[in-house]
Image (tube, rainbow, N blue to C red; front, side):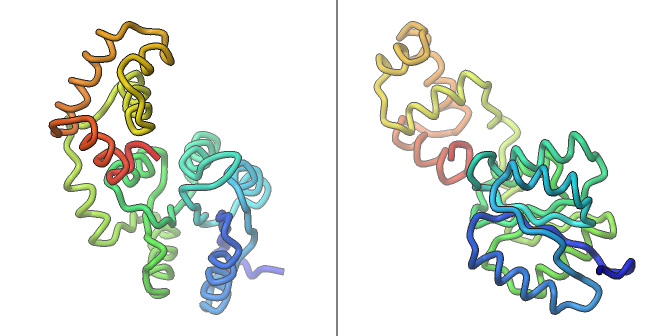
Length: 208
């Protein structure tokens, strides 16, 4: 039975060791308790709906449904949900998309336990919690870096090492159209070639 005064926390992460550590930290903190543990994004949405926790800790990379999609789905159904993304990824696009999807906090798994506790209390109180490295990542994001859906599709295939011709065949468009999109991508990412575009896309979290 949970105390009415406790902050009820739900965890969504597909790594059992990570979950075990989070449970130990949170359950040992006065005024906090774990109410549920989900192992994939779809389960996270279903569990949130059933438990209505005060704060949800959600990993970005999970099976069945990504953490980002889970955050987005929970936020659409529960606009006042309090969620913190907990991940190993600190690319500016990862941070930007998580906050845009509805997260109020963003933490890296290498954080000290006191940072986690502080984040939970802040988000539960209705405040955002973004540590300095995350704020720096956001500050480095260019407002000109937004890519269209088609540009993202082309960039994903560039990351996979496909030639312009293969990209054209895959997407059902002409090779000249692919070249046009590639030039736009290079301009938006401020890089000079396809290899640099692929590296930048992975580093910044534009493409998983």
